[in-house]
View 1 (tube, one colour):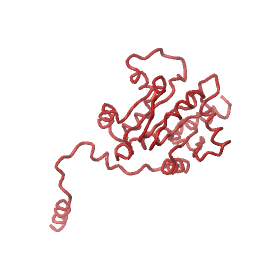
View 2 (tube, helix red, strand yellow):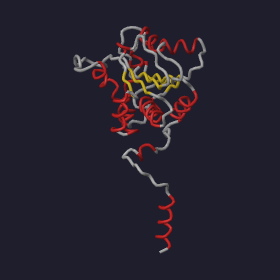
View 3 (cartoon, one colour):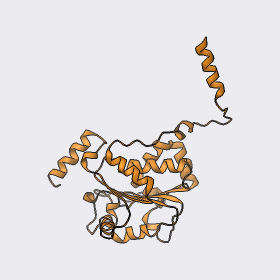
View 4 (cartoon, helix red, strand yellow):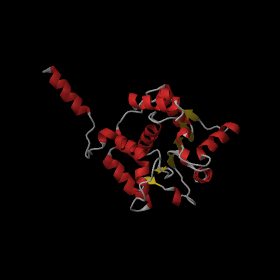
Length: 238
């Protein structure tokens, strides 16, 4: 009897809610927990710097953490918008042109980021934010002349940007923005100098106060299979 009374008192003490949505549980998710020391370094850099460069092989959480942070910042209304972009350079033989608008064409290219955001904030909340313009997927083709303000901007697969493209991207950034640039310089699909490699050189040579977080294959958390294959290709220089 005492247990039942205690439970009733606990329920009564809760603040009554007039409108409850199916996103309530997702809005009260805990903070991202790092799985490796390098991920902890990445999260720390995101918490203190307006620009962060993150490098490393597949499966280390580079894109997942960026997408999850974007979802949290948007849900908590710490930013007005999330802007996502990446160069549309195929990593293999091209499947040809995708149908639809420019935004619809680039959607498959940014799927790793948008899937991470959907997982964090819920597919329904993601679609609402996308339709409202709170999440914007911006192709490089229409970026020139834009200014991004009060938003979190993510450039994924940056190793496939040319020097001119990454220069154009970085000069779009306005006030109250955080920029996350991630990529793997060992996996560039360009025949010319990678814009990401140039940016890293500029940061280090000019001692710019921009954190560069470098993951290694020891930081791979996707799976043992992923880690095994990354090691196999790296060790044979393929």
